[in-house]
Length: 277
Image 1 (tube, rainbow, N blue to C red):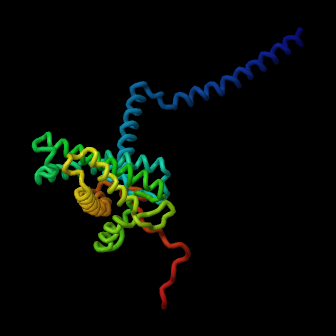
Image 2: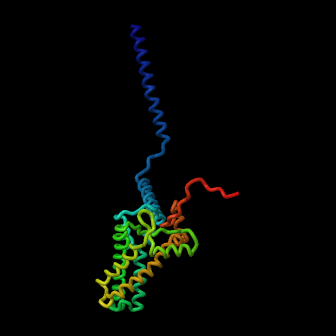
């Protein structure tokens, strides 16, 4: 009997040890959980998501402004060639760019003041016709000069900002872009795409301009005027990153290329050359 009682005490002691061993980690976990911060409420989660969304939208907007120009979408941001699909996208982006709308609005006002295209008349109706024809000729010029001909001739229709050198050097570079362009392989070539694209656009414009404008002489006259405005446009593109930076907008998103369209000269490879003693 005493033996059975002794065995019972051993079992009770063993069971007590097991219970205490199991309760130790549980109490430790409860202590750790008591020290943890409270779970965020639904209101806190919604507020955090809203702040992240607003911050993300702001950051995305700034990054777009800092990496690619919405005003001049043809400013190159890298030297990788464009395939035909991307050239078509660029042509569409150029057509709806603010610079083209403002340019058409400006030239249409000058045309109305000089009573050019008299067949359109005056007042707001005449201005609207001039503005529409200007936008239409710009669109066809981009289709021919940015997509179709560059895809066939393997030309790169983008503008590569020089961003180094003196005033005369940069102005000369911008004006030479009228007749010299880049190829998909990075070489230089005569700008058949830009010149023929503009001429083809003016030829197509004879299908919707007033009858008195559909002559060979006036077609080439409009082509010459378009080339003059293109030269002004190249100058604006060359100095657009400088203007953009002077407004201190690019400081909001500092990066390797904080200016839109900037293609800086590549660094020389190899060890640095020591100056002569």
